Length: 146
Image 1 (cartoon, rainbow, N blue to C red):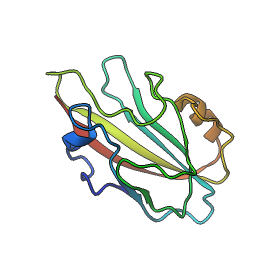
Image 2 (tube, helix red, strand yellow):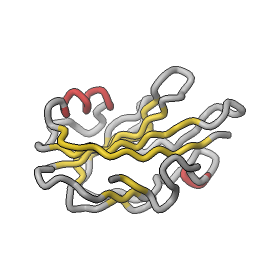
Image 3 (cartoon, one colour):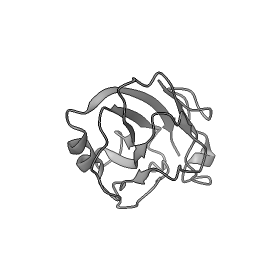
Image 4 (cartoon, rainbow, N blue to C red):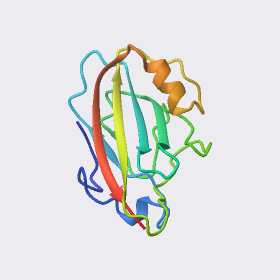
């Protein structure tokens, strides 16, 4: 189960977590992680982006015992991947003005083994590395439009 104290599943992401605000990453929480989990991976994507799926955040190396990520901070043990624009770290939601709200899909993957993916890996590289290792996943969807 993946959730955020900042917004409900299917709800609006508060402005402060977007390009119209501070652009800080929202706090996330998870529970019911399978016992076999050795690592958690988070991928945040906008499937409604004009050019197709846009990756906003890739986080690797999350401990299953962590329970969540505090707002705007990052645990020292994680490795960050690359967004679709090439940025390493959280890239806040920033849909085109006047185009309606986009969906931002936060997916947390529970893996039975640790990934051999490096700092700055793309979401596609991470997905290939996760092949055959996913034991469960949780999803949270937020919406934002400008």
